[in-house]
Image 1 (cartoon, rainbow, N blue to C red):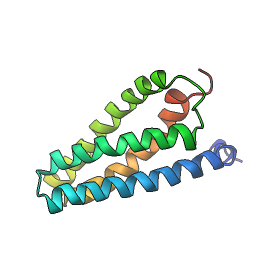
Image 2 (cartoon, rainbow, N blue to C red; image 1 turned 120 degrees about the horizontal axis):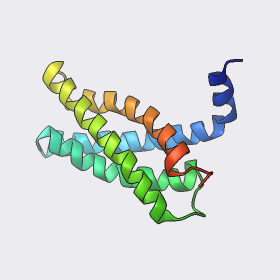
Image 3 (cartoon, rainbow, N blue to C red; image 1 turned 60 degrees about the vertical axis):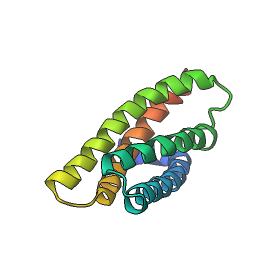
Length: 136
């Protein structure tokens, strides 16, 4: 078996929990963008930014307690490392949103969808091996 398949099998429950958290936070994020941009008619970068901030708080808590079960170690250390991940994901999210709207002439909704795929992949790896690493 390839290393990728073995990795997926070994981590299947954690990946499944991560997927559940991802679905919950995607729905939250998309709903917030829809409310802020669609209903309140805020500028799309502002709507995406506000939705991102609210969503990451839920994302951190759900992953800390549910996905990685890291509630027995320092929350301060987790928050600091999570902050690094957020900076990376924020830049990815806003960049993809801008490219989607300005270059491809699609809606900010599409930007959120595209950014979610990339940040989900990055987040799993960063959280597993850096933020909530069991080796710490």
